[in-house]
Every structure is written in C-alpha cells, then in structure tokens.
Image (cartoon, rainbow, N blue to C red):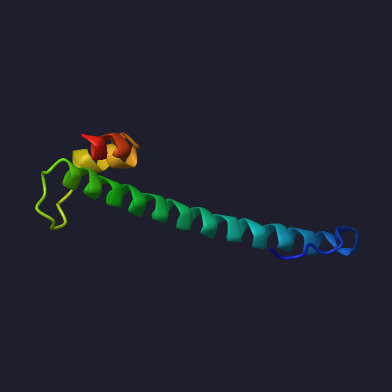
Length: 84
C-alpha cells in the first residue's frame, strides 16, 4: 500500500488529482473482483454438475438459465453434495 502524502501540503488541484487516481484504481480493482467472482461461480457450477453425475469429465455447456442462477449465487452447498 502506498504511503499517503501529507495532505496539508497538497494544493486543491493535487488533492483532486489524487482522488481521481484512487477512484480509477478502485474501479479497476472492482472490475477485476467481479470478473474473478464470475469465473469462480462458473467453476463451482462445473463442480456441482460433476458431483451430481451429469458430466463425464468434459466441461459442460452452461445455458442462460443456469448462468443466471450461478451469477445470482443460487448454487447448492458444495460440501453437502460431496457427502451425498
């Protein structure tokens, strides 16, 4: 993490620029987080399909309804499926 400068020594323009830089950085982190979350959910869905025996090991095709459920977080509990 970057060390913050002494804010009292910055001009208004420098403060605005710092705010803009940090806002841009936050947007990029947020975008990356959303992409990673989507990938994790797709992988979980694949694992659920395999554990339910609907797949022979190849990656299954996810239809629009299934993708909607995945992205909405409505997946079964993975630990429960492994015990069944």
